[in-house]
Length: 304
Image (tube, rainbow, N blue to C red; front, side):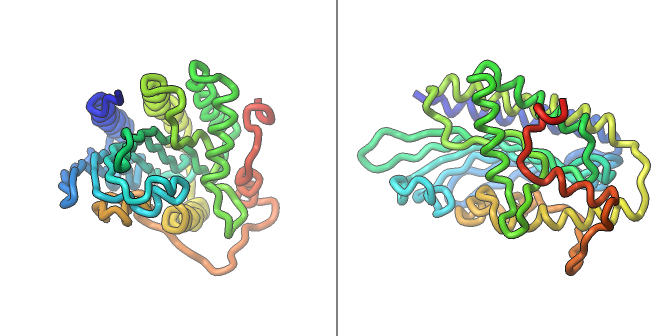
């Protein structure tokens, strides 16, 4: 039987460990916590670091919630679960660095359980992590994907990495722009076929691997000199992040449709952003170079 208490314990610990590590790296301020209760069932704790030395905003949320009926965002690809009672728990984070040379990043690990009438509970894991640079460095992209590939090794090796990398490329894709949100990583959902213990172990590998993937990039890029041009480009490209989260992201839709805490759901949005009509970068510029990274690519094959 699924051990949801073990999952919840791991996720709470993961939130603690990530917040401690990021606050230590930032060195300028600490996370503030909002504990909240959801009227229909459950609650969570949202932690946000604002105006830090490294991070303009970093949010790490934990929730364990339940409801009488799964919302449409959760049943669009599982229509047989429509109307089923459910419960879920997860950790989700988004970091918006101050330095334009340090990429924005997102990670999420979650567990769902639905209880259709007259049937045994149906459970599954989901999650992943992805990277959104504004000024990409090949060394950073290689490191990110090597960590992703290596953590997949005990769970199907190259085949698991290839499948979940491809899923990430396909999911974090702005169809109206014809571009990926960044350079990808891993994404998975509906993971159950390997059994609870193996699926849970993979979730832990992804959750634990996030800091291994991101912190070395922070160390390399946090002090890179930049000026107003780079800052303005960062703010412009953050607009794409807003577009994806508000138009396509299933986690955002699920939170809003299930009556979640709005401030916690939208803490993924950047604190500052700009939109500019029909702007295009100067050909051959560092800003124009980004376009070549916003498409599915075999990073480990092309850049190694």
